[in-house]
Length: 399
Image (cartoon, rainbow, N blue to C red; front, top):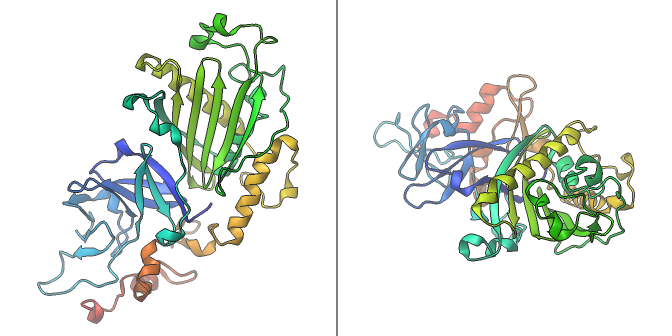
């Protein structure tokens, strides 16, 4: 799993003033919308005091209140109130939690999971179709949804870019098993963070709502023109599929959110330039969900669960170039130190229970508070770790 990237973690309209827990890269976050400013906040879902989940708390103005002892945290993660303190007693500088950069774009909340300063962060991807939505007088109608996979997000990412699986996994839907050949293609790199493959594929006979228009586009598959299709990945976890149908364009964006190494929550948005009335939304949702169910029936059972780092560990052919490009780019980022490693995980006092702790930018910006970020060192007794976490010396807590 990759850190130091923007992750689209939730639909914007689902984030309210009620704190909610989400899981990204194995780390618990609490997200909420501040009532005064209306901006979205993402904090580590762990009170620095006794480890309670802040997502179980509530908001006091723009501050989140821990449900255990009432500690209050500002959106920047700093604790500003400890109810148990006597009057005049200060708040330890180390009383703070990680706060992660947040942006809202394309109808999603994006959280930067890493500690890079702003000028060093990879850019957010560009989804140009969102400047051309029906709601704003444009061409594209959107529908959204989500799907839970029991698979690693990188396996899902490669599946979404894999052109050769369509005639078999999606036979009769948008794959034609009688014409499964994949033309040679060149990988397109719009930037250093994405790659796409564009090919002409032979479609199956249209069905359902689309089938009613078969007489306009021709039901003789041998005479029907091929459908130009683009599929590709956008780091760290996004898929874009663009199908240029005779009746219009269909585009699907997936954000494959790694819950852990073998569980992935996909939130998707599908755009279309045909049947743009709301009456066709249900059909568009059902078609997209059927694709996910067909893919999951195969991908959830793929072994090994994780992508090998050795390219020679799995057999690749010409049609797999887009996946090979991803694996090579991932290796470059791993060499750069952007792959989660043992330093990003903590082990609890219950055996086999681990969690991710990804440092926020504040860890770099406030080096004098370095002790505040020690959750637990490997092999350290839990009570010792708790002492280090809070500063633990009562005589020092006013400093």
